[in-house]
Length: 466
Image (cartoon, rainbow, N blue to C red):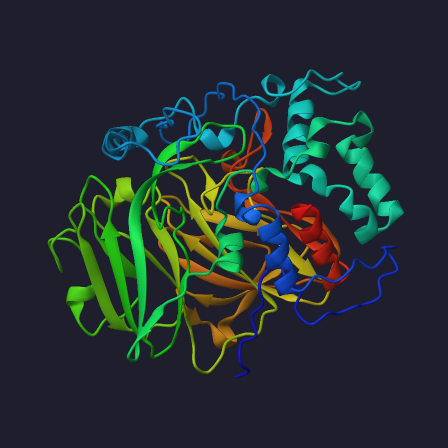
């Protein structure tokens, strides 16, 4: 098999420049990885730190899915008090009942922005729904002129109502305003091991934190690894000797299970009272094993797990196979959850979900990981997906194409997407109450943005950093 070639998802691979009669465009100036990182630093802490003051939140509409939320007690706090993590267990227990304020439904757009004239034939639903998309695109909109050309750009201007001069045109996209994003964090500051002899050693903490589901709603009291939800990607190669140290900074016990890993020593399996005692507050506990299982795996709590995983104790564990895998130019991890925070992709709900970016001719790998309690059928508009692995196991000749792929709780599916048609393509769960409500799209929604050339992705990145 060919050796895997995987590039940072927001950075260009080998540039391709296929002709496209449908899209009149100019060439964006190049931006190297070094320049990207330098630009991130100049921007004041990088992409992840780039935030814009959020609009004042309003009460979310009543929704029949998702748990009751524990809100942060004070604006600007960087971590919850010791009692917050413990008290959120009580609110998580209420998640079996219908919620009155699921955060990923988001507040009424009409209550968080200046009043607009409702166009003839529209209702307030249309105004609110458009505002959600405006928040998602933000000040990225002008960059599409050089990418797609004036004809396509004029249509986008009309759809967004850019002639209104709406406030989101001067604000960063919602996904740039919510703090850590897994995809961006893995580019800017990937988790790196220490090499102790022939063992790769990773050090992680288990922490209380405040998570912004989107840029308007108040943050929720959550949990995370290294103060992230999802936790940072742990990436190793097949056959590596691995040691992962977890320091418990919570006020409650926990344990960590590496989901999908086949252990030689079952005492490394991470199930309190079956293979170990729970990790107590202040304790550091180590897991040691050889990475034999390959592909898209996960790590998460396996102690009071309905509560702790639901509050954010989850992360990706990727083992690259020695003999290579299906080639991909860009690689995205996509972890779904449906408990604290409502319906989320990588800990955020639309419009604060990071788009998938690809240039014409490129192949993108998406690693779907379901850490929730519901099945989610992921549907991509306009372009087929090719499912190439399930639970880390290559499908080989059993690989298949689809436009909708159901991912059950605990499952991982790898799909490849060949970017064949330029445009902005909706990408969402197809259980419709998980993605759309009275005020427009929310929750498990993002887009695949296919641009004509790899250098156009540089243009998007420059616009995000500007």
